[in-house]
Length: 234
Image (cartoon, rainbow, N blue to C red; front, side, top):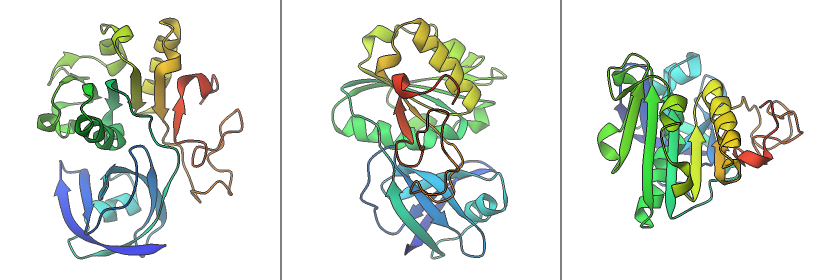
């Protein structure tokens, strides 16, 4: 473990914040850190840039992190895991806080000159973050307060998926499973990559807490899996 100081805390809404570090972590989009908030537990969080994680307050540890202050000290291990595979023509599909690793990927691909379309869904407009930072994006909200009224899977059904070299996905399990079935039906599962957010305790493949039905460890063989690598239940 090594320690870094927090450089800034950017509050996106009352429950979501980006925690920026004072230095960059050598990493690739899709990788994650084990974050130690002193006095609380250690948790896995995807990098949202080389020097940040973006987190939603859902428990004591994430609440403490969202409410942290500049100059606070936190412990880090990593980065760990398999990252996304770069491509020149990409579709990014995100749901809720699943946008975190995909924001890192978006910026990385844009810097490489790739064409990127972002499809981002959330419950309401206030849950959509970084809306103005994507060059090409369409949005979905459950209540219709921004963009398409409905869920991300329904919105993706209207898109010509054959145009993209890679399709990158991260979000709630029901969304990912819906996309998995859609891509399978449309015969594009081979070019889809899914970032899974399973519970991880150690981050290095020893504890077995994140093992999938097929024996793959999300923290080591993932967290990014190609669609054709995933078991039917994941």
